[in-house]
Amino acid sequence: MELAQDRVEVLRRIDEYERLGYFDRDVENDPPTRPLRPGEVDYTLKKLSSRIASEFANEVARRHFDKCIKRGDLVIKEVRGIENYRAVKDRGVIITANHFNAFDNYAVFKAIQKDLGRKRLYKIIREGNYTSFPGLYGYFFRHCNTLPLSADHRAFRELRDAIGVLLGRGEKILIYPEQGMWWNYRKPRPLKSGAFHFAAKENAPVLPFFLTMEDTDRIGADGFPIQAYTVHILPVIEPDPTLTARENAERMCSLNYEAWKQTYEQFYGIPLTYTTQQ
Image 1 (cartoon, rainbow, N blue to C red):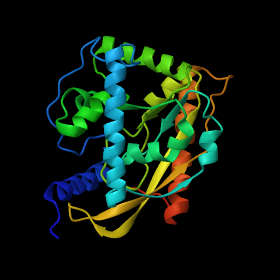
Image 2: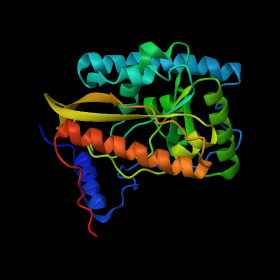
Image 3: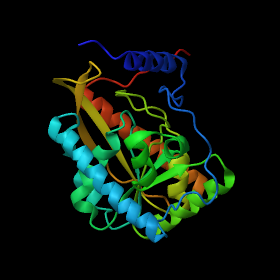
């Protein structure tokens, strides 16, 4: 089967950006976007119309992605460390995960679905995915418990306040601290501190997830092997009450990266190295 040229080009950009140390640069050709306006997003689903739309969209999404699993387009081979989630399942938690596929957030959801109870998994997303992404996935981005991260200061304050409300009522919030999706990239990338500032401000624990992958013997529509995911749920990182919020954010960010690095090296059996030119 011929390789999809858009995936070939993305892999080329990933190689280039790793070499140059541009780990937070987008590699996908995303559609043009517009900024969010203050008041545009009902982050905490205060409105009845928002709650109804969310219930319907989540059901559509679950059926869609469960069909992907049944067809073998999304393969979750194993979940390790569920006891780490269960240790904090009754609390508001910031979940971090590496980001390498549009399906990876559903793998995170499936790993904890049976233990979520009446709580939900909220996802921080880029504002363009909310405002401008077309088709079915755009619909999911707008209604499936997503929290778009806006460049507008007033809209950002609304998000920040909503995160406090959601954590206060025990919800789980998934944030990708690497910033941006690098397709099928197996290494952990250097982390941005935003997720950890949210956790430190709200005195909330961070629960690191790291997804590893292996080639299956099935070839996807893009000509590349479909990946089988192992979801690693790592030990919780609690804020230190003796530190300032800034110090806590830096500490939790560093501990999160080290946990990912250790998991990467143990699973793949190789040291973590980058091609970055010094």
